[in-house]
View (cartoon, one colour):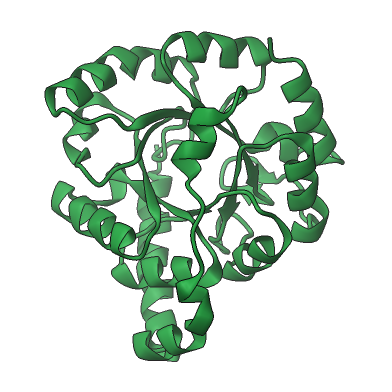
Length: 269
């Protein structure tokens, strides 16, 4: 089976190097100006306080499903997500594989007051500065892309930039990436190597996640990501101590993602 993650990361290294050459870090920070002083919103607090905990994702396509909503516009979806009751929003900024851009994140910041997660394959500190300048409140760090040492360094830098961290794992061994600067600990139900999705992965890992967090005396908020399409699944995940639920495809494959989200939340007990 072809490892899609390897292709994505290889492409991302080339992309980030080009970005760094085109816009030097000092230039990026200069362009950021007042944006770097902008107070950030706590995604963790928003999820903890929400009865639904839905992180609604803006995603035009995926490597496995192709185009979901090719003509989707941030202005047409993000405000509708906020109105529909989302607790936070995730914005894909990868172009080649997901049809997103940093411009989408920047536009989203100007349109909604919800916490925004930059969802991408973070492999370089430069991307964290990009995220802050473009309006992110939180960043995704994927254990499969990073060493535990890199994960710690990136998480600490994110905190220095006043952003929260969602650490994503797919297997129990990746729990070694957990560190004190992780605010939210997510399980990706989708294998990034094969893109096979199985929601049971969250239930399989729930006990191990809770054990490790207790042993390390940490208390990250637990998030389940990908493959969630039924309200009953959210109810079951809440019983397993999950408080955040990242859902994209279920909403984005419909004509009106915001209305689909509102109906989904309305169906939650």
